[in-house]
Length: 314
Image (cartoon, rainbow, N blue to C red; front, side, top):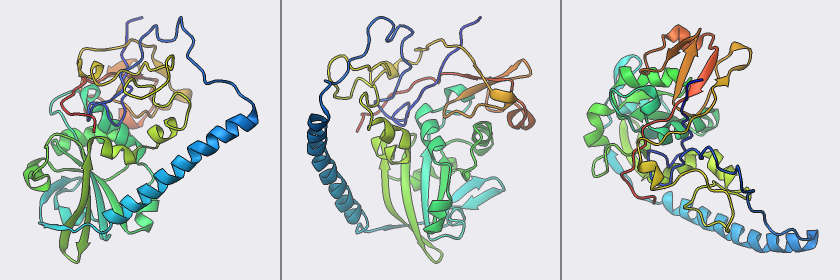
């Protein structure tokens, strides 16, 4: 069987430093991972109670930071800034879809690259945000502003099976991201007052981890994210790459293909190559037709993106 490759990106993947490279083929094969000390229930609870006090302080500090965030000033932006959407040219104001607030995720894009070589970190983040009704109930619209061309990137949106609103902001990035690093992922919040639009907050790099429940859940487990930049005890498994490994664009790990149950496509938060009726559709986001993407897929092969690292972790 020919070797395939894997895309196991995280939100700090090719978007920001600290991403996960796939574990090596021999990781954990010879050495069992370390484990915490085994103690009686009372000792365990006493240690947990001490940690809980710190967790509560962390929560309260997060609440205080959020309160300060709500008191930030705002800056007006041109409501008529051009975007490209599914129906052609549109505006920033239209992206609100009539709601009062807008959260826009600025998706990194590498024009002309195949689907498997698009941003693994942005792909990870975009996949986490699927259910929008809770945001809508608070008068908030969420949308992705891709930093590449619409036709090309929209095929990727469809290819991944995403349902969130998708726009190209490519021609307006100098205005929308003024003073910031174009080509880096950003999460930007807006509010409108009638037909006027204001920017109220933005973040980048690890700041976009707020989109990601997977990392938050991993942080509750004994082994955490299993990445070497974490402060973990000796012997804890950390096979998922790191800030140096992710910078090597040629790093790949072979794996076995995944078979979709009952012929349905496997939806994964990664760049994918589809094997449709025995034919591989992986050369570009448009390589599989809409019918192939939405139809019966015999198996899904995950493919690794080119890893790019040009930013610090913070």
